[in-house]
Amino acid sequence: MTAINRLRLAEHCHHAGSAGAIGAGLLACALVAGVGSLLPAKRELEQARLALVEAQQRAQAPKPEKPVQTVEEQLASFYEHFPDREQAPHLLEQVYAAAGDFGLEVRRGDYAVADDRRAGLISYQVLVPLSGQYTQIRGFVDQVLRSVPTLAVDELGFARQGISHSRLDAQVRLNLYMARM
Image (cartoon, rainbow, N blue to C red; front, side):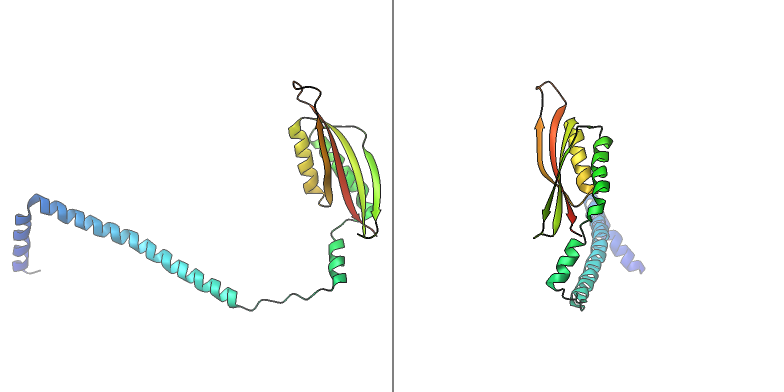
């Protein structure tokens, strides 16, 4: 910067006064803030563009084709998910162990076996009478359904001796589905 230019700048600053100096300071702050917010936004925009290009490339990439299964293969795959009859005692032990885990009082259960030849499944119907707090019974049902995936709750009934009693008597009817092998 030459001496003449410095002299002109000083003269302009003197004429602008304190209001001009404040305005120039605010203008400088606005420039810094604008650049400070635009640069990260520009980086985010570039990242979004790259992600879009990658997603478009993935969408256009050839997908591996799954082999077409026959109806018999689909049925066989379906039945593979069911345990066989020999596992029934072990799975029922898991049911009663879950009741013990939640501190529930289990009375004698009733069992019935139904063989549905058309569906290709055997159903062990179990009526489990329980006594305990609602949260214990709820936890028991949740745990049993998570630990035995081929188990279904058919019926769940509650009874309380009186409104002041916190213990419930529950009747839980379960169906354990097994493969006919």
